[in-house]
Every structure is written in C-alpha cells, then in structure tokens.
Image (tube, rainbow, N blue to C red):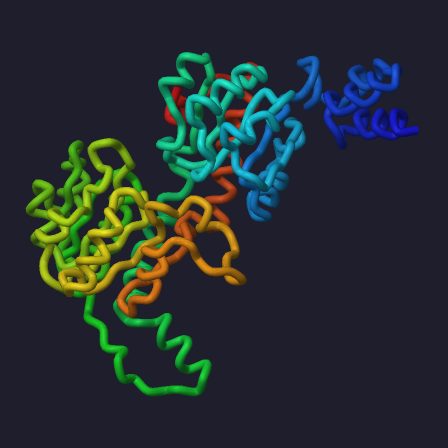
Length: 380
C-alpha cells in the first residue's frame, strides 16, 4: 500500500520521483508510469535534484515552498546547522543550501564531496563561512545571492540609528507602563550631521542616499570608489582615517576579509570623534567587541547600534529567553543604555525573502543544466 500511495503522489507531482523510487525499490516494485506520466516540470532528467536545506527557520520554508519553481526540487529541510559533524545528513543530496552560521570548512566540504554533493548554495551574499580553496579542490560549485534587497539592509541601518538616537525603544517600554515622562529621552537632529560610510557597494550607496535625504553630509571610503554616483548624490570620498575621524555617525557596509577583520579596534576607535555613534549591519567581526566595550565605557562612543555581532553563531536566530546567556561580552553590551542590538534581522523583509528564494532556486535548477549559472551569483 505504501508503494502504491507514493507512486500515485509521484504521478501527480506531489513528491519527487527520487523519493518514490527509493520506497518502491525497497519493496521490489516500480511502475514506469511514475516517469512517463510525471508532470512536464519533472521530466528531462532521471530524477529531481535533492537539496539538503540547513538552519531552516519557518520563514525560510514558507518563502522557498511558495516559489513557483519549488516543486521542481526535492527538499530536505533541517533545523540544525551544517558543520563537519552534521554533514553526513546530506547523503543522497546533489546540493546543500546554507546560511551565514553554517560552517563549511575543509572537513565539512570533504564529507560533502564524498557523498556526491555538487553544489553549495548560499542563501545570503557573504561567503566567509566557506573554505573556497577546499571547495575548488573538491570540485564543488559555490553560489550565493549577491543582492537580495539592498534597500532592506540600508533601511534597517537608518531605523536602528533613529531608534537609538531618539530612544524609541525606551520610550515604547515606558508608555506601556503608563510612564509618560520625557526625562532621559533627549536625542539629536540628523540634519546637518556628518555621516561616514565605510563601503559603497549597493547597500552602502543606498544608505548614503537615505542619509542625504535627511540633510546629512556624507563622506565615504571604499577601495573602489563610485565617483559618478558620488558626484550625482553629493557624497565625498576620502581616505579611511579621514572618514573615521571626521564623522558624527559611522556606518559599516563592508565584506569580511582578512583586511577588514577587526577594522574597528582600540586604535581606530580612538581616532573617532568623541561621542560619535557607530552602526554595523554588515559583518560582526568587523568590530573588536572588547575594544568596543572599552570605547563605550570611556565615552569615546556615544552610542552603538548592531544588527551583527562577532560571536553571534549559536546565539542569534535562536530563543535564549529561558536560560542564562553564556556570552559575557554580549550580555554586557545589552546592559548599556546607549547600545541597541537586533539579531541579524536587517535582511528580513518580504521582498528580500522572495528574492533570496527566487535566486537560490534558480541556481539549484542550473545544477541539472537547465541554464547557466548567473555570473554575479557564482563564487567558485
């Protein structure tokens, strides 16, 4: 009965032919109509690509399954992260789909290669959690989502700054307790302030344009300056030290590389204007957390807004409300009245999640040669 039931589902396109064949082969029975009568979207290959999907959250599954092409892939959703210790769970999959806190080091990639996995699909823009040299050695293709919604992250950057500066989070909690006092809620105008933007990729440029809309002066640093864009929007490029020392607000939009690791450290933070605000919606390891705490304690920094944290793995994206947080530095940062932290949610908009699903599924379908991989999406 199990074989007949799954056979019927496969004919209707509800389950993949791989799943059907596995069950019915184990029972010694198979009806070729599963292939012959399968929907057109399932034809052209012997079976669908099986995708092992890691660190699954409810919104991931919702948006991926909602995509029109989702039925052309055989999904295995796992809530745990992909590491060398969990890589065996990709057995039988042609591709793995991972996020920022999965760890694809050499050991993990070696296991994946041995299992026959051919593609690593990152559903994010960054790829610093993948050993690219090992991926090349093992012949694994690595793809990403280069620009799911730069507006989502740029807008969250400004939202964090506004909430921190005008103390909206504190005011919200007060009035819910019927405390309508304004004491301690004084902020400052963004108009007329100088904003420093480190990194003028798509997100950094949009953030700069939003700040220009507030009437801010914007100075920027990027090793590859976009001069035509800067001239059009009234943005001035300068060297790194000038930007860091010459702004009231510094916002980070850089990739994590060996050169940018702990770019904000004790020395560089000391160069900033006394009382400056710092916003990071990029990569946590751009900032040395120990140095950041010292700068806050000394008053060198007037406020810090973070959507990322250098040791966020195992903390962000999870509910720890019922137990003691084990990260002492994060616990200390959360206790400061002039620090606002969100848990890597800058990307979390309807538009961004839809685009992440669309681009990732497109790359996964390319594994069977339906079309070529998009150049911007290919890492290896």
